[in-house]
Image (cartoon, rainbow, N blue to C red; front, side, top):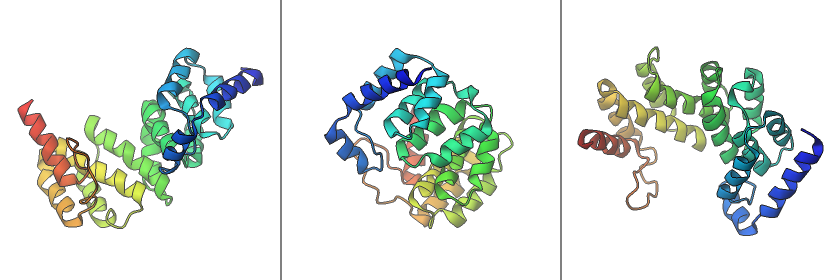
Length: 223
């Protein structure tokens, strides 16, 4: 794709910029002001364009990077490329979409999961735990679930926010999906009290692991 096309897309994104949206997003660490429904509409029109996606990513603009993640071909990225992209992704929404929309569909997901989970950077490690949660739910064969619970029990309480959130999700997923580990997962959640007081809107499930596990198990039983 030519630079002109990137320039046209950037101009379109600039025209969609909403100061109020930016103000709300910046409170969550996302430095852009584009409505995500409108961003998805642009992506739908552009369809899959891997070269354009790479060029948009290279702009280092958050809205452009979100768009890039919607129009890219996940299996086309090399492992080192995805690793570099994740380490550049400091905006939470970019980080989240990269992991969920791209890395989870990549043939390199398992190698990156192992690498990232052990990373000293808590933001990078949180991506590894997000991939671990996915495996706990969909492909647990070969995972050391008891070992994961050992790590969560030892490290989650004092982990930085994003890493703590990701580890907590793994804890809940183990408790929900694996009855043989449920009692221990509930016990760890009760003792550590991580996210116990998290403000949860009415009719939403609390992220506090014991509440989350019990609610999802209840729903499965009544389904």
